[in-house]
Image (cartoon, rainbow, N blue to C red; front, top):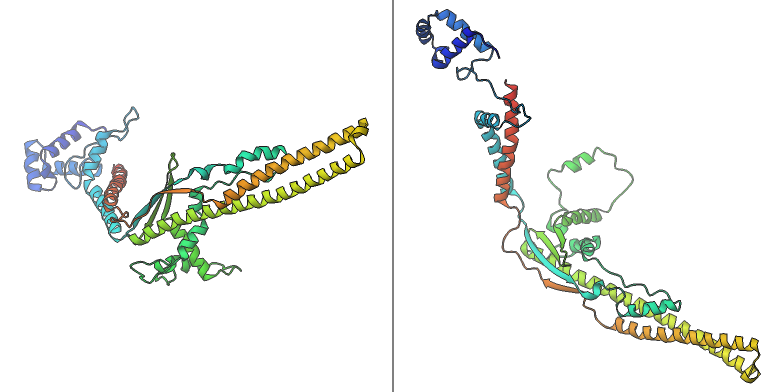
Length: 400
């Protein structure tokens, strides 16, 4: 802003004697010193106030504010720091409010305890076909199908299943709150009417439709959604699987984590047993059919030999005899292969496979996992400060 020489002189006088802005006696004395009348000095000061060249609060000359962005399109840190010093009260107030809000939340937030289990899939869990796989190629050579690879199981998918979570929700758990046992619906008091429920209040004004849901099923669904947020699964590159459970009761968290481990082991073991039984039954049926085909081909060859002794063979009879002998050899090979597979399938069905190795069982936590009050307070302060600085810069620029 361009100033005349007279305006610069008045600003210099005010800067040297700021008290003349509000003190008439002092203003008259200073005016005589600089060869001016009190009225002239008073009028010039009023004009400078209107133009914003004199701060109305401090009575001092208003210094020109530095731009936040320099001519090289860089942030002017000096200007930002000057604004922070100028608006320190506002920044302090916003940061204090944010910190206080974080502190209140940290004090009233629900306390959770964490329990973890860790497990490794056993070697046979990831193999395709087990011992039966050694004979699958040979069986396919003879046109025997149905012995596909044994199913593999992804443990994180099992843990994330609705079936497991529904079992956990509806199972009765003994806790400090309910020594006799209760399911998670009752433990979380989802079946009780809430004093203030905005969602329920809003749904009253919405069309209900023609779908009527079972109240108990609805509560179970809500509990499953809540439980889903409290169970986390982490799978390492090495294959180690860690399951963490958060609960308000440390014993409950440990019990649920151990229940998950047992569920995974029982589920995979049962499914493997069913698959082994299915393979055994399939091989047994194939073996029975192969035995029938072998006996049938042997009878045909025997009948042909009785009717046509080898001494009287003609070229046509030799070809028929050769085909019948080849059919017997082929059926015999298929039957021998299936008989071997049948014996191995019975062994697979009878033996107990180690499918999951448990490394660590869950134990009740001795320290709370959430909320992390110190971290919440620190982040609240930093968040408030990061909000306050841009607000201060915006307000400061608007005041120019």
